[in-house]
Image (tube, rainbow over all chains, first blue to last red; front, side, top):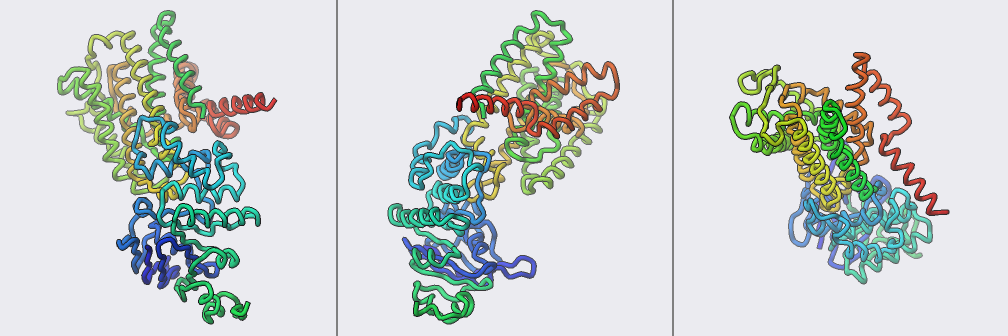
Length: 249
Length: 313
């Protein structure tokens, strides 16, 4: 579904992404891991078009989408959540998701129908599926951090994605919230048939839900493979897992 | 926020204004018409400033464009007044499209700086082009259609067109376009990520705001039968920005209230002292320090607090 080939991006002299390769197949959950500053978020920004790459290719469903701006990649079927909560803070939970749905349906240039009458069912069903329906009228700046992260995912779902990209979905969540969020991600794949690409620091989560894992160090991909392959790879252990032998665990 | 309440308040105010000329001297109806005109201009600015988060520093240029568009059609080209009234706002919208097209590539303050330069350029052209615009004299004694030729006719025309313009803008702000615009204001990156073409929406918003700025310009022509370059000088843009901040830039009717306060101050206080702007300045400082959401914003806040308290009891 998604292929990333030899992607490059520098900021000034700093090579944030320096030869990233990634392969995501239909219906798969793929995790990207790597130390802080490895370029995971930049990679996601390049794929979704928030940033435009200096070199390399992004192919989505056989089509070259390299450098396509964010609002176009979204229409192609890639939506995302952000690592740092990034929502419309003055609007309610419901309004946040509704903007995404309105945009997905190409209704944002409708000038005269009150928004209140449009896409209420679609929006409500998304909020139900992520468990935020009871809080739909809260102004989202007032939600707990965990709920805001879930709202992030709900907004991303509003774009009716085929590929959902989650940037550290459980960062800053309490253990209970984390558990719920993991169940949610699994449910999205199983019941809605989404393909999911995410990055995460919590190894338990990564090895728990990912089908395959890609490891990035200093902007470059060092390996992509199934969990055991990655766990036993010497380069990964040296660079990331602290050099200790976790293969036997 | 309080959308229905805003509408109800608007209707009540309009009803009072409709019967006002029966008991008021002509001077006051002129003053009210001027407040509605200036308030409409400030509201159209706030459409992009408060609801779109777009730093439109020189909005008055569209006021001038609408007024000059109508004045030139009528006085220089000899068309009927009604045609001039329609062409004025269209000229303003077209100018807004051109300036917007150049400016939306930039964001925030950079947008504002470029917009103020381009607007000032238009002002300079109007100020110098004696043959076409009347230069610094402007155009006076513009003939009006009979219906709006009398002060009373002009008053009601201003009231009706001003009221309709407010309703249309209010409606647009509650449409998907309006929701999207407010989304862009709150978070442009997120809007992009849900598939919104941010620049295209901003451009459309700027054109709509320019159009209604032009409508306000036409209303001024109807009320005053004249145009002059000061109508598109940047100090007026500053004044209408102050009105929006004073009244409450996150509320729909705030700019109208700000206009009422400012225009009244100018009218009554300037009779006593030339330094009326000093009083306006002090008022603005006080509002920014103590009521950061403006006068109407504060009223709504108190109202909301009361209703939520009484709901809890």
